[in-house]
Image 1: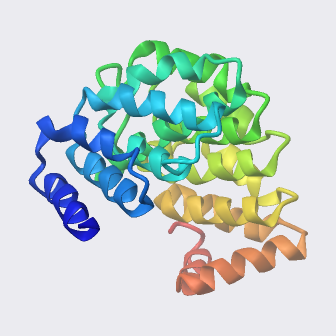
Image 2: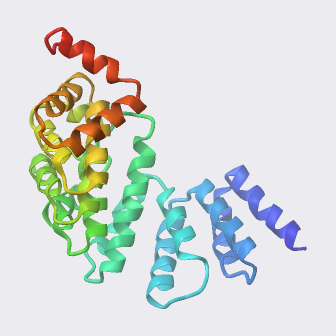
Length: 272
C-alpha cells in the first residue's frame, strides 16, 4: 500500500499534473517520511505558481514552530526549484527581523537565480525578471546584514544584478570581515560581464586574502574571466613577494594545464 501510494504521487510529478498540487501538499502530512519526500519531489517538478506561498508558509512553520516534518532542507530545496516569477512572495521574508527567515528567503532566491542562470553565462537579473523592490533591498540592506550567511548569499545574487549600486556593493563585499562572504562574492564574479576594469582589480586583491579559500576562489574566477583575468593573475604572480600566494597560483595553473601558457605569454612580452 505504501509503495503504491508513493508510485502514484511520483507519477503526478512525472506527468506535471498541476491541479494535483493540493493533494501533494496534503501528502506532506503523511506519517511516512518517504511519502513526504516523494510529494515534495513531485511538487518541485510541477512548480504550480499557486503552491509556492503555501509551501513558503509551511517552511516558516517548520522553522519557527520546530515542526518535525517535512525536513526543512528538503522543503527549502523544493521552493528553490520554482521559477523566479514566484520571487515576489519572498519580499516579506527578506524584510523580516528574524534572521533565520531572512536567511531562508535569500537562500531560496539564490537557488532560483542560479537555476535560471545555469545555461546562460550572460544572464542578468533585469527588472523584468526580478522585482525592483527586491533588487533595491539587496543593495541597500541585505548586503550588510548582521548574518554572514545572508551577506554571502546576497553577494551571489547581486553579482547578477545590473543595478547602479551593484559594483560599489560588490567591492564592499570583497573586503567583508567574514571570509565566507568574500569567497562567495569572488566565486559569483566568474561571469563574462565582470571581465572589466571596474571589478577585476578587486578580485585581484583577493589573491592576497588571509584565507586560502578566498585566494583559491580569486584564482579560479580570474582564469574564468578570460584574457583580462589571466593577465591580472599572471601579473600578480610576477609581482608578489609572498611565496604562499605564488605557490598557490602555480598549483592552480598546473591543475588546469595552464602553466605553459603563463610561461609562453610572458616569454612573448605578456600579450596573451
